[in-house]
Length: 67
Image (tube, rainbow, N blue to C red; front, side, top):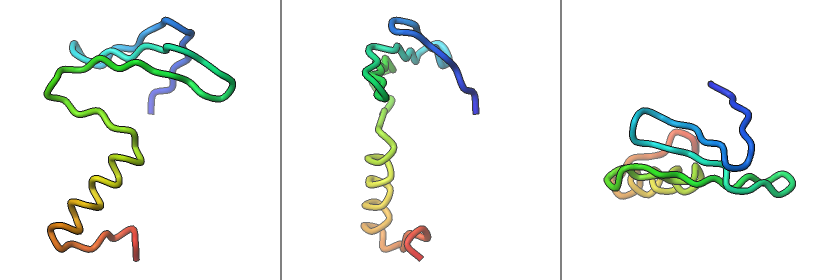
């Protein structure tokens, strides 16, 4: 894992199409802005895990994390 230190307004680039900018820092919270191609989905981790769980339930699979 790459760990970076950035200040407000500084950016991180992923490839040619994804840009992450530090928008605000309040105590222990950091607000990020993400610019990505329209067809690319960007999710918070907890929402992404919920989507995966719902897809697995819809297809009749059991989530191995629940065992």
